[in-house]
Image (cartoon, rainbow, N blue to C red):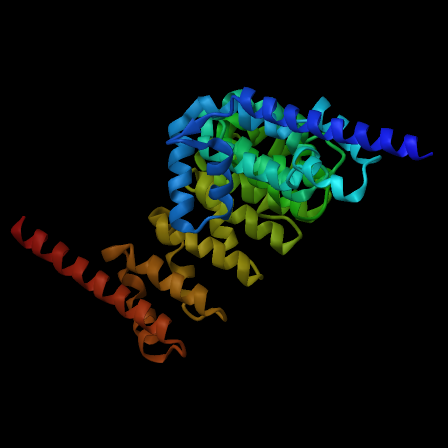
Length: 399
């Protein structure tokens, strides 16, 4: 029995020595990039844990290494235990407690999640120079930990258009957090995210919660290529989806011109929130056509204050709508909403001399309105109109 114990002890010692030798060999063969004499891993750790000055210095060092550091960082995301690490773990199982210490330096890696987060932050710092790491980062995007998938999404968003296919594919993942991270990242690619439109439209139509808003946000940034999908969504039986689709079309603006008829119909929707978003969108998409101006003029009479407010704000920046609806704007100086009254005063004032027929209404507002902002807006409108009148009169006399 004693002989057996001696044999086990000697074997363990030999194993420890072999493991130590293996560790030295691994370090000797280490090809980790260095900058200014420091390992890349040291710079990466400082990028995440140092103070602001250290982080800035680390970012500059990583950027200076450029593509040279990408293979190492990508490897940190996909690295699996080496044969030496696996052997060290097995040997440790049969060693006395006092003899396990030397092996821990081999088989006890730093927290793997922390290591991956550091690598992802470094790759994000490298931006498009890290394009070769897209496959490794796409794999990290599918990690179950939310912190990792979010960090991977941020990295992919900085790595150029080569990342788009991986992000589009990730929109089909079953994990909500992965899809959400992919949506966030795709928003950074604007029109280059067009390949994701069908999947984004599906998310917008079928899912609830924040990811629904993310999907509509990306669609609005894609621009013209997303318009047909948004027009389909505008026909949804779900009022929230219709409202979000109209809002996205409004963000796209003039490039959504093919949706003009859909927006005009939306301005007559039975749901106030939907009408509001449709009228807002008409202001950027179709404020100058005869049909668009008519729809916006009708919206000035909407029973809901949010819809009237959207229409009168369009009149502020579209003088033709204000001129066509001058009488109604004068009436809106007495609207229940201070915001509507203030916007009506601005719209009339912006017409200059053409707003003169509403001077009396403006003077009443400038004196009697309960809100200081409305009184000030009316006073400025009066000043603008009177100045325009003086200029017009002087020009007439000179002529």
